[in-house]
Image (cartoon, rainbow, N blue to C red; front, side, top):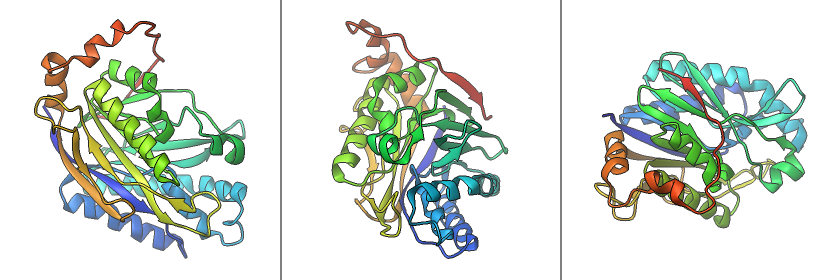
Length: 298
């Protein structure tokens, strides 16, 4: 049994004047979550795009903004690793475009453990904007991270709307799905939120959504951001009647906290009012699931 507090960020995209300003901002956010007793801090999809503002000459150009952020990724990751160790928290960093050896960019979320280990989950299904304007390529590997807090998977934004991805992670033992998101409309926010809640229902597990919020008129990538953070579970047993453990106020810059207990996941999967996880295969036309790689971050 593992009981702990999870913090989901409603994270603003700020225009930054220098690296020190970014470092101070991230440190302030992480230390705030640690002070509230969180063991896991979750940041949103494409939250790292604020780093494009560090190069005023290119920040208004979509392609060059992506290049700028990707080039800073090693430095960003070093800072997250340091903060995870200092605060003894697990941290899902805001996802960022990463330039790979094939010359293409992929949307990468990185999870940092306090012991110095790191795991990466790339986004697997691209939205129209990513395909048609960003030219972000899809990742291929689906991973579950074995941590001191339990088994954790990451479904980045649009990925949460595709049940087979989460289901494969559940089959591999995932007790919590992290859903970092970046949406420019309430339609988009609700699609991802409903996807996260549906995945929690189907998998009888927790789902944690963290969105970007606010306006960044200087950015061609993340200029408008709508959403609210939320921590969800299946509406059954000791979980809330509606499955909502906590949600934030849409558009606010804040942490949203909830206490989670992985023993409840095991209990519901074994003897819940319904047994969605066990009965999955009874669906007519149930399909083979993607392969999942287990990454040990313990």
